[in-house]
Amino acid sequence: MKRVTIPIPGRPYEALIGSGLLKAAGEHIAAIAPAGARFFVVTNPVVRGKWGSALERSLKDAKLKAEWLEIPDGERMKTMGTIENLAGRMLKAGADRGVAVIGFGGGVVGDLAGFLASVFMRGVPVIQVPTTFLAQVDASIGGKTGVNLSAGKNLLGTFHQPLAVLIDPAVLATLPDREFRAGLFESLKCGVISRAEIFEYMEKERDRILQREAAALEWLIAETVEVKARVVGEDEREAGLRRILNFGHTIGHALEAETKYKQYLHGEAVAWGMVAATMLSVAMQKTPPPTAQRIIAAVLAYSPLPKVNVRAKSVVKRLAMDKKSRNGVPHFILPVEIGKVEISNEVPPDMVIHALDEVRYLSKWNSGE
Ligand SMILES: NC(=O)c1ccc[n+]([C@@H]2O[C@H](COP(=O)([O-])OP(=O)(O)OC[C@H]3O[C@@H](n4cnc5c(N)ncnc54)[C@H](O)[C@@H]3O)[C@@H](O)[C@H]2O)c1
Ligand SMILES: [Zn+2]
Image (spheres, helix red, strand yellow):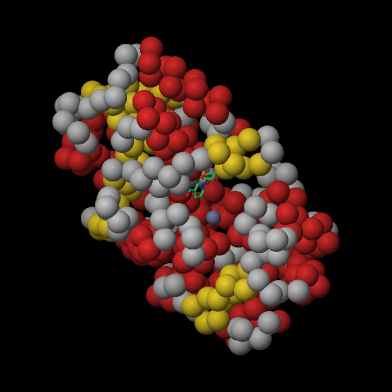
């Protein structure tokens, strides 16, 4: 088992990563949760059906009192309505300030469980037990929670750091292939922005990773969590450094929104966003072409990816309105070398249009359609 500390000033916590860890989850939770706490496990029927009994047994073995709160599967459940509904169910079950929430599922469940815990009776502890690759390396780390409004995603949210994050790569065995591959791009991102070893590992060990070999996943998850941990530890509230985690996300988010969140999984849109940002970086003369080639080849090695068929002009318009743009000028995270990036808000819109046209062309040859 690997341990990574998330060094949030004043309240550091640990992510434990180990294949089969779910069986020992109860024991780990008992060690960190307030004595006598009553637990509410937020999950969905898919995750509960596949892995619920393992978690349930381990909580029982550790003599922890737990009640289960199921919500239907899907991003559409990430609303204030669900938060109210869950809080109501907790109260009905007699919950008071002495409870703790366990988020057991992908990023949707984790964001809801974290939000719920942050506001229930002005805040109770949460423990994250993420079950998708994306949630294991990204959503469960850093304490961001959120729900969607009809006007946009994650527009309401809080910062609420978990007591601990328990990561069992073995649960990824049941994850659909597309979901699994999409999550891997967040690891590749961390390789490009900060830790070249992750990038090189993903270049070399593609087959072991795609076969979901336990040792390969443990290594990859622990290293990725460590990058995110270090970044959020230095910049909990996203004032500066945390922005480098947005590599591939400026254009990725625009692609997702432009296709109404139907065409791409988040990681797939980020994959194309990383390709586009790399092309921009070459055009801005920040990345040498051979380095850019390597990054693009690594992205494509984890394809197929859905095609890009949006209008470049609409994407540029959308970028100007993005909540992370300052005065209508989007910022781009541009790779300089593998493991190092620069933030630029000086990328001219016609360069963005050109990069998107190139991506659209490239995507014709690499789509799974
Ligand atoms: N808080 C953050 O910092 C942060 C960061 C990134 C993403 N997010 C959020 O995360 C969400 C996306 O998360 P996601 O990609 O995990 O999607 P998800 O939670 O919708 O999970 C994807 C699908 O996989 C299923 N699933 C989960 N675990 C499984 C398993 N072990 N076996 C089989 N199926 C399983 C889920 O039921 C779902 O159908 C978005 O809402 C996004 O906003 C949050
Ligand atoms: Zn992301």
